[in-house]
Length: 251
Image (tube, rainbow, N blue to C red; front, side, top):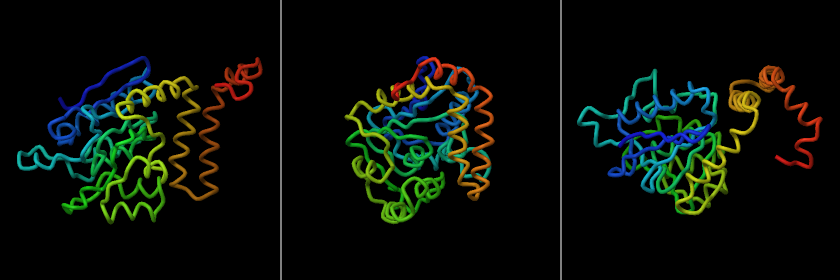
């Protein structure tokens, strides 16, 4: 119960397993989730992680019922976020495999991931709007950056449910898959990503995130600096291209 990890070659599938509360996350579970992602980041052989909720639910948010027991989610300014890893900036990609509900803090966990593979009947939403509980794990920052301010405000202010089809249309979902297939398809995508030269992939990924911190000229300079790191290890890839690999767009 809580957090489990299943490792397959270079892929870690990190599993939220609290079925009695639709995979809601309390304080100890958030801590375990953060530590698991720290271990993933530190493991050299691990290339891509998949975050998945077992039993048909991604995550229904923070488990507010545990607050009275002293097991509620931490709300300190420094350190881990209330849901665990949401303040981390990893060097490796994470893919959310979303089924059922990804709402409230669970929505924020999905937003923290790089990509979202979403089942047809999955639902996103700021459902915490009903209880006066704030978005405190990056939701008001990541959501408008993903889908634009106007659409983000629509979701933030209304708390309404968002279907998989709408999520795809507005850029919240990256792929829609059949029900029961999100983990399988996310792991397939993770394996594809893990096959690429990793230094270049990670440097390009970080530059894509970091550009928000800079004006245009500084963002371009930052991209160039990341590129110089990648070019130090690009010789083998260039030689493979010269020798005929990858012609006609073949991967």
